Structures are given as C-alpha cells and as structure tokens.
Amino acid sequence: MSNIYDSARELSQTLRNSDEFQNLKNLHEEVENDEVAKRMLDNFRQIQLDLQQKQMQGQQPSEEEITQAQKQFEMVQQHDVISKLMEEEQRMSTIISDLNKIITEPLEDLYGSPEEQQG
Amino acid sequence: MSNIYDSARELSQTLRNSDEFQNLKNLHEEVENDEVAKRMLDNFRQIQLDLQQKQMQGQQPSEEEITQAQKQFEMVQQHDVISKLMEEEQRMSTIISDLNKIITEPLEDLYGSPEEQQG
Ligand SMILES: [Ca+2]
Ligand SMILES: [Ca+2]
Image 1 (cartoon, chains in turn red, purple):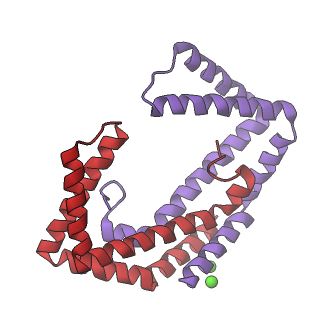
Image 2: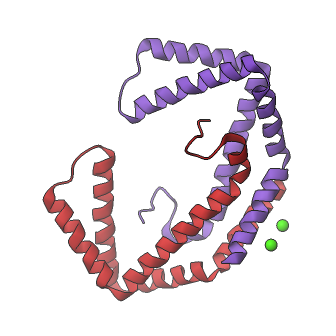
C-alpha cells in the first residue's frame, strides 16, 4: 500500500515540476497581481458558475444572462494573459483527465469503461 | 510532459501489482464464476443504480423500493464472498480518492481545495 502512495507522490512531484504546471502557475500569479485582470476573470467565473448551477437545477438561464456570459467570454478571450491562462487550464484539465484514465486502467480491466461501469 | 505520463503509468502498474488490487480481482473473479452470487450482486447493483438515478432526477423512491433495496443489501451482506468483495471495493475507492488528492495537490496549492475551487 505505501508503495502506491509513494508512487502517487512521485507523480504529483513530476506534475509540479512540469513545464505545463509551471506555465499555469506563472500565468495564475500574473493575473493575481493585476487587479483589473483579476476582477475581469473573477467576474467571468462567477457568471459561468451561476449558469452551471442553474443548469444543474434544471433552470433555463434568461436571454440576458446568456448575452452577458457571451460578452464576458469575448472580453476574457481578448485579454492576452487571461486567454493564455485559460488555455493552460484547458491543457492541465486534459492532462489530469488522461492521468485518471491511465491510473484507473486496472479497474477498467475489471469493471469495463466508466460508461458501462455500475459498481 | 512524457515524464508525467511515464510516472502515471508507473503508478498504474504499482496499483495493479498491489495486494489491494489483487484481492479485489480475485474476489471479482470468484463472484463472476458463481452464477448465484453473480445474479444476486447484479440485482443489488441494479436496484442501487435505479435509486441513484431517481435521486439525481429529484424523485422520491417509493417505500416499497426502499424496503426492497434494504432486503437486497442484507442478502449481499450475508453472502461471504460478495460482502468481502464490497469491502475491498470500498477500500479501493478510498485509495483512488487518496491518489486523486495527492496528485492534484499542486493544483490545490494554486486554486484552493475543490470545495472553494471555481475554475
Ligand atoms: Ca518510487
Ligand atoms: Ca519514472
């Protein structure tokens, strides 16, 4: 058992040292240190979160909310640092998802892929 | 990047070789090769799945369904191999959850714990 955890800590350290994480960290700090960028991004995320929560509760967002979300999305897309940060976040999200698939392969061999999995 | 994936493959292999996974695999095969046990477990899982889906759709399960689920649960609990399998599944589930926490620690340092996390 301790071997599994040792191996996970190695992976975690490898991830931390990777260019992908370091890029993400630098861009994150750049935004944190830029008050205007930070407010823009926080605002965008709050709007995204509100939309997600509505959808999870089966509510239809209003036309105004959708327009507002699109406007905010265009704003952050045009912001050089924020758009780079979001790109790196997308890359990291893909990596984490790949890691999960690789690590749980032994379980997939037993139970089938997550789509078919019941237990 | 390839280092991250190499490290994940090492972890996956360590997990596959672990006593915890091998126990789970053996118990899983034992149930698969026992027609009665397999039918009992499949039936239990189907009932659990139906209940979960109802809850996710915000529906209240009927009293009969809850009684049925409890009866099935007692049956699988009393079955030696199935109850051991479910115990090992619980143990594996805890391990996988721990691994996720360890691996995503670098991201938690950036964004805070998943509860606070928005991006
Ligand atoms: Ca090692
Ligand atoms: Ca290695």
